[in-house]
Image (spheres, one colour):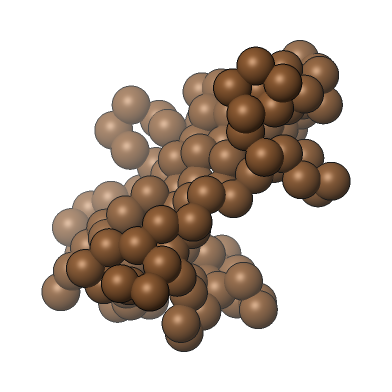
Length: 128
């Protein structure tokens, strides 16, 4: 079973997410969208037509989305079989959150690494 196949997103806390996003847009050319982040499209061996994406998004400094992690960032990794991988990780003794979200954006699950960092696992929808 493949585990991680790429980076799906980089999320980080910011004291002023809008101002920071504007800085990245002005000085580094990040194409910040009205929702506050950016999506980078790319291709690779698993998606030669360029269907892959990596999201970049600042979050408010007081977000609870990264909890229980105290880190100021969270990485989202792309996976091929979220439910299968979560079962394997549980069997290996990894801390796995019970909640799994499924929507038109794909399937999302979360684990906590040995240093207490919350890690998001994402199975994109078919074709993504």
